[in-house]
Image (tube, rainbow, N blue to C red; front, side, top):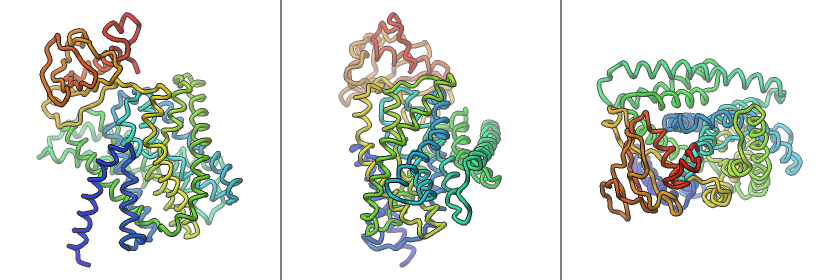
Length: 500
């Protein structure tokens, strides 16, 4: 087949994948399911394109995950996740270890598999997926701390799980002991963090003081710095995933030129990586082998979702409380347990033991089934579960993703507020919001029509408000809007400060 044919096929695949994002958005499903389905159609069970190279799939998968993690770090607002980081780090380390052990113990007894294989299954399934979490949870109106825990955890927990899977997949060596595992993991994480703390601040300083020839070079420079950290950490035998995420987090929250353009470029690169990754993994799967993995997959997935994840969350929350890092109520713990979405990461990790030993393909098939089935179950139900548990935050404020270079020059931000049914913002006049002097509601979108409000304009449910605010008072603006949404214009009298 000619190069032109493959370009035609590739273009058609990407157009179909992009179109499927709209379907996924409406249904509440992570788009990864449709991408995987597209890969299955292209693979040996559909059109017939042969792809069975787990080693190549592993390398492509790990590279794509680095791109996705870089985008996650660049688009994460540090002010939103700052208070969530302690619990997220515990979940990403202690929580991962607890999840691995619980799943391994359960599947050893229920499926009768050997201890090493059970540990590999537990390690592969321990990581929540950044792409799945970001795509679903950023559409949910969650309190900043709860959403921040899930986002930060999904960014941090890839590193220890990759280390665990690699160590366990060295079939020529004995299963590593607990002490060896903790020591190796700790060293790799420290090296990754050290590389990020060197590359991130130095890169941010350089980009602020070096005038590049074109604005389009800034996004390339930022991503290049993230990959520099990834490659440098790996060469030093550290965690490349932790390095790339932390570096991107530092750069994404630094006052860099053309930040909005950089975020947009990174988002496009991440979508490209997701589509390539999921379609490739779908092609790698053998549909005729998947039925045999359904029962083991359902057993492992049920143990993971209903036992291992809740236990890991409870243990992590208890440790955070004992260390005086903040209390997490049972409602939040229940939501964290249900919202631990799995996606491409477990499937990519499953290629590591398969690449090391062909006999481990059964792990890949089992994990493939777990991801598909439980993403279908968990993804669309998250809004319902949030409402039932009462952990939603309908007045939450979100960044409006637009090119805003003029606002950057003024050190300002553009925010979007959607007023949900039942919000106490309904009926409040604009001047009664008492926003800080550095902020103003510049536009109201109501029933598909937009207008510039006056001070006496009343806010209505289902309105969308565009708020321009200086960077210095943005946090105060968000707190005030959350407070009024919960308790009305007299929120201050009731002691409501909109802190979460």
